[in-house]
Image (cartoon, rainbow, N blue to C red; front, top):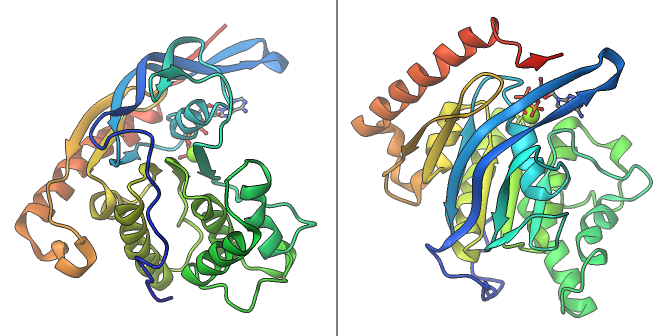
Length: 286
Ligand SMILES: Nc1ncnc2c1ncn2[C@@H]1O[C@H](COP(=O)(O)OP(=O)(O)OP(=O)(O)O)[C@@H](O)[C@H]1O
Ligand SMILES: [Mg+2]
């Protein structure tokens, strides 16, 4: 995997860097469990503003509503109350300005690697020529280390390889907003670090706004401009920690800095209480 940052011209975004791009206002969302006649509150009263070109990592215990939050921003889940604005407009459904790397890959089994990634362009009018699309697809296949697997089907791939197809599919159209739900969870440790570094370079070149869900505090600190810690269910924002470490972080060896250790300790303290608290919580009403 070699970085070819700069090969592709950064697209002009239709928003300013540092202007609010995603705004969650008193967002509450959940699910009706008809089988048990229950209303399960996944997220409660989330207030968060994410600015253009910002990289925000979300951490919190399993089941606290991280995926639900990403799905609301993606327009796949509707809020019960409150709202999410994307570039000033309430989200009413999915759009070409947002792409998601799904926690469970969500690849089409009957499509090859190449065709799964190309799908990103079939769902929107990108304004790119066939040749440009081909060049982009090849670039991102190479970026995620899948050269030679273009014609393979998902069943022929390992879990980590499937996840890398999902990452390439979300990156290839260079959407304004990238929603990444534990994108590196199934990727082996060595590839993971290389891909984190690639992602940092890609988004700093493209100016994309990123919401990145992870269970790894190290990953959140290495990638995030800010880390939002979510409480146990019903999830709400416990604290938003600013990560003021130099970039590119993988070149700067920021893990060796004393600020890194104190940030890690602070976030771990916040998350630890929530993981322990999660066992007692239900968030279910009848
Ligand atoms: N489609 C659904 N129908 C019913 N309940 C759901 C659905 N999706 C999620 N939930 C419930 O909502 C809560 C939050 O789930 P969510 O997937 O958002 O958590 P998460 O923080 O992403 O967890 P993890 O870290 O394990 O991925 C959980 O209690 C889960 O059982
Ligand atoms: Mg999840």
